[in-house]
Image 1: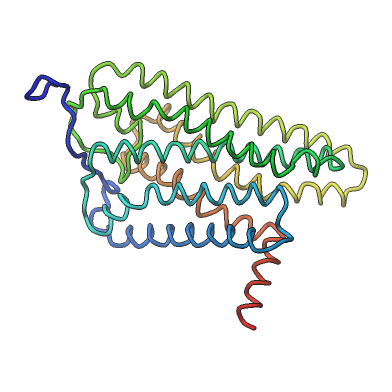
Image 2 (image 1 turned 60 degrees about the vertical axis):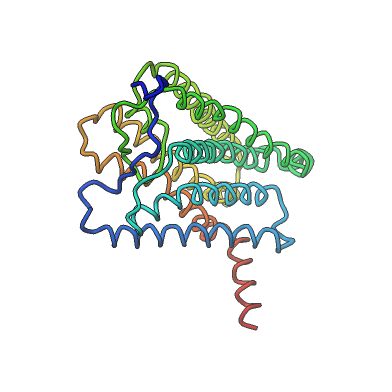
Length: 314
């Protein structure tokens, strides 16, 4: 569609949507989202503070956990403005350029989480398969390089997205299907030739989620082989236990992604509320669950929390 001056039409604002069929209960939905945000933000800030303050946690495993918590804060804060505006203040409009910025940050933090989970699987692989070289392989400089590499890779691969969307005309309306901006959602209301966007989007998904998940599976196959070679059952259980927190975090991240993909691929006639709810699970559950998982399953984190609570009571 062409504008008045002959340029491609792009709306000044886009309209966000809450959860279909739950207009009456928006107050309760807003309360649920506020609780999820509070748990996520307080939990991840607590993990970060604990790792920084406790010398016993200045180890590679907890450095990667700090990266994960920092990234989860980024995921939560990137969706927070529009979600709270939609559900708490019934303000459903977002500027087009602001929507592109939000889309970029949401996808960037999501892809970074996949890379951080891969780095954490490498940490577990070295700790179990080559424990004598653990301290020399995972030095502070290498951990920093891995973190910067994950950030750079995610930023570079996602950087073209806003410009690829910006070039398209929008003639199928301006109503989004979520309370935040995602690339597939923008493609539903865009017209013109979207093949480049779709092909590049598929390439990015395979290059990130596909490659990362394949290497995570490979690392755990090698870990499993190494653990099964241990003669003592007690030592085997102890080795497996050091991986449980990371396995739970991987499942919390990848299961919703796989479920969303399966629904889009094999259940296209699903009610809109199903797609919206699964997308919300994909974005809101991992940042909330990760601090809980590591607080419950990691003895050192529990000990640090109890130590802080004891100091505050004293």
